Structures are given as structure tokens and as C-alpha cells.
Amino acid sequence: MKNTMKKPVNIPVSKLRPFEGHPFKVKDDAEMNTLIESVQTTGILSPLIVRPIESTEEYEVISGHRRLHAAVKAGITEVPALIYALDRDSAAIAVVDSNLHREHILPSEKAFAYKLKLDAMRRQGFRSDLTSDQVGRKLETADIIAQQSDDSKTQVRRYIRLTHLIPELLDLMDEGKIALSVGVELSYLDDQSQYDVLEQCEQNDCTPSYSQAWRMHKADREGLLTKAVIQDIMCEEKANQKETIKVSAERLRAVLPKGMDSQKTEDFIIRACEHYRKYLRNRDRESR
Image 1: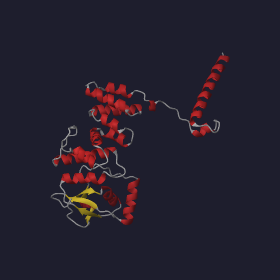
Image 2: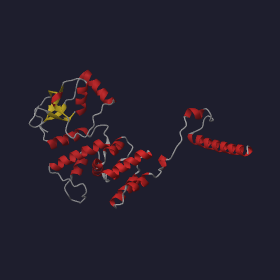
Image 3: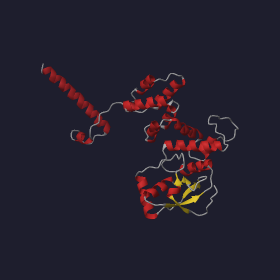
Image 4: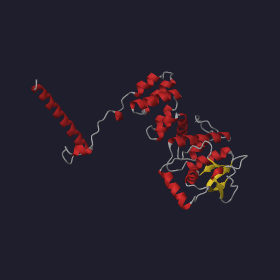
């Protein structure tokens, strides 16, 4: 990257634009509040990196979207920035590379970041075949992306598959309710089928296991996937979603012997219930 300005310059925030298609979310959360307080106290210590937008007097942010958001929230009208003369594709790659090593990255962010970088590299002339594994070939785009990140080429492919998920299923992934492997399998279903899966998730208060997602993908490949099939698969009871009954620890402590571990507690409760059930049966017989 060629820096057209060797030193940071102050740019009005009104002339700064978020990078179009920026895959990393800027949230008004506790971390942002801390950043806003820091900006109010000490200003922006690390300059933003921006590029001139062609035929305008404005700039597109490459690195520093959260700092810019914090500055706006803090009421700051100018921010320091380094200006780099980059074309759109080079800037897209720089956006991804400057954010991928953050401590907290959501699956959806990584998915669209890899996709953004893949598309930019493809337009720059890199190979974009994500399926070929021939020996002796030139490095493909996925190889290069993998070498520049903490993920393997296979993992890069899997993340890019997630860009085919509907937003609602992506949100479930970001919330940790759907595993990456499950999301990959569901990504092969068309949008309507994915919404049918989502409907079952909401109705049954559950999420698909890998086995369920794999079977739905398999049925889809064979042309057999219907809403009824999705319902049948999703209605299966999973071991970790069987009905449970919760009792507060305070109520249990009042009636249980002291010094019992969880297994002994469970055994004691079951035996107590069995004893009480026998008592009720005997009482009913005597009352006849």
C-alpha cells in the first residue's frame, strides 16, 4: 500500500464513509461504551486508515470503523487518518486483513470477510477454484487466504459456505446456538427450506444437530426434501433436549440431608418420589 500522506491528517467525520460491504459489525455495546469514554478522554490515539473515493472529496474507511463510530458518538468532528491510494479490490483485501486478527470475531463476520477477500482476489486474477485438489497446481485463492489467516483452506471454504445461510440462521450461529458444521450443511438448502428449518426451531425450541442437518442436506441432494421431511427430522427428540424439571437449590436444601453430591441428590429424590407414590396408592386403597 502506498501512503499518499506520510503523516496523519485530520479529516472531518462528515467526509468519511464506511467501507461498502464491510463485514465486521459495529455494535453499541459495553466495549463500545468503553471506547467512547476513552475517545472523550484521550482522543483517537491510533489514526484511521482511509482511501480517497474516486471523483469525490470523501474518503472510505479501511481500518478504524469502531473508532470512527466512537468519535461520532463522542461528538468529535475530526479524526486523524492515514490516506492510502488503493483501488477498490486492494482496499477490500486490506479491510479484511486489518480486522481478521481481532480477539472476538463472529462466524458471520469471518464468513463474509473471507468472501469479500475471495471476490477481490479473483478480480485481481487469482485462481478461485475452491474444489480442485490436484497435485502440482498453482496456489488457489483459498490456499493464499489460509496462509494469511489462522484457518486452514478447508476451514476457509466452510466459512464462505455460511454466506449462503439466511440471516436468521446466521444469527443463531453468532449466538452459539448452531455449530459451524451444522451451518455448513444447512447452507446447501434453498432459502425456503432454510426458513422451514427455522420455523421448526422456533416451534420446538430447539436447533438441529449435525446428524439432522446432514440428513436434510442428503435428502435435498436426492430431491426428497420437503417441509414434511424437515418437520419429521426436526421433531426427533435429542438427548440434550429431553424434557427436564428444575427445582431451586434453596427448596432442595430445606428437605435434603446435608453433604450429598449431585448423583446422591438425584437418587434420593427418585427414591423419595417412589416412596410417596406407594403412600398415595395405599391411601387410595384404604379409602375405597
